[in-house]
Length: 162
Ligand SMILES: [Mg+2]
Image 1 (cartoon, helix red, strand yellow):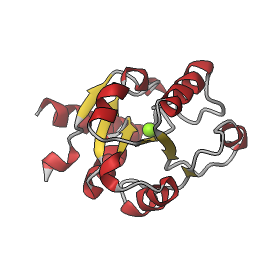
Image 2 (tube, protein in one colour):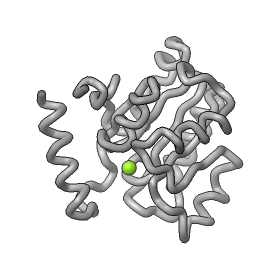
Image 3 (cartoon, protein in one colour):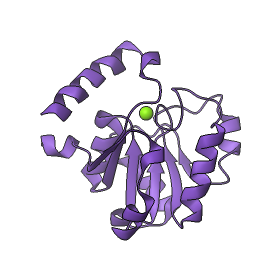
Image 4 (tube, protein in one colour):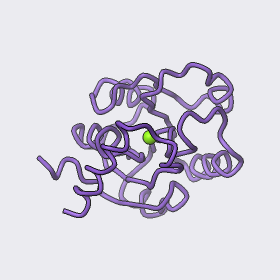
């Protein structure tokens, strides 16, 4: 059961993803979490580096999608900057329904899609339940997180040490 919580890979940030290796293992789509994965929690706009990186990922041939538990309010600017890549807000991670609806929009089979996120108990667990390959990244700005997330972070650290 605990194995289902462990990511397949860990990276310091999304910019450290090895796109060649992921492509070689059959990945054709990448799902990104938003908050603390591509910017600090609740960010209203992707910064230049993130936008450039997403372009790179797309240019290498990957389909790109976004899966967020955030409700999406106040993020119209963010949506507009995403070039029509599919987004699911209110995803309810780790429940499978959000992943399923995004996978449908990406139009790729499970085994060709990887999930990249900063939280084990939402991003990683939900993805592994469905059988997706997973990459855990370090949170962009952990100091801005609330008390519930801090407790989860503690559990995450214990689990990763184990
Ligand atoms: Mg996150």
